[in-house]
Image (cartoon, rainbow, N blue to C red; front, side):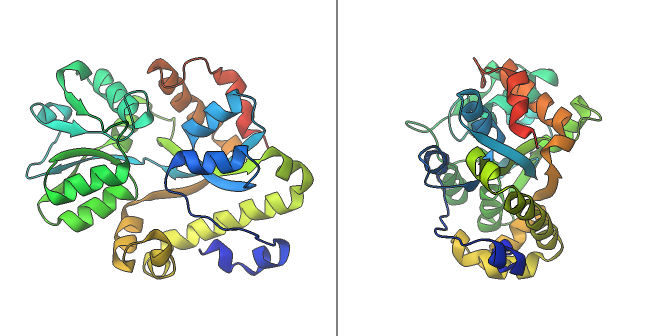
Length: 282
């Protein structure tokens, strides 16, 4: 919403359609079917599309350290404390939330098979996991942002962000940066046809991201309606979120480490990691 206030964007772009997506498959469908030129996507989803030959580019990463384990009624200081609790997990076993959790467990000396992961049918929607946690029907959930912050905000004082994946990632991969999650996605044809506008969009996204980081209250006010929650909830989320604009080509090594972990955990199966790096070329 801050980006749309930019005078430079207003002068350089005629935005014919603005859609807010919730289910990942929707925005991927818009991109593939030429219903959108610009979107924001998880790195894993973009990598899969690129390896299938889709003409896309991911020139910038904006969201980092996005996975959280929340507990209600107890605190978990390590994975050991999660034993005996059902861990409600969004999506499915070969998706990043479960895969990154399994990877971190194994690398810190735990066997994922000794923990009980619960997935929805046909797969768990993050908002469903959030509602389960808020209602008290689930005491342990893995959530991404912003659902994680919304769940903590609504659940109150008895809820905790127990295990920080970003901290664990940094200890396991010193010098590799943060745990990457999502970023800016362009149709390749758009970049080829409008390179100046693409560069301008990137510059304005960077400025908007910095503004949001430093003005969470104001950002909450202008985006609450679009996000479907109160301005206070958005501000709470923004004070916890790891938002940081980084040009993908400048952090390619960080992105490669993450992709290799997804490959190790069989989230990416037939995908070629070296080929995927072309996604970040700019």
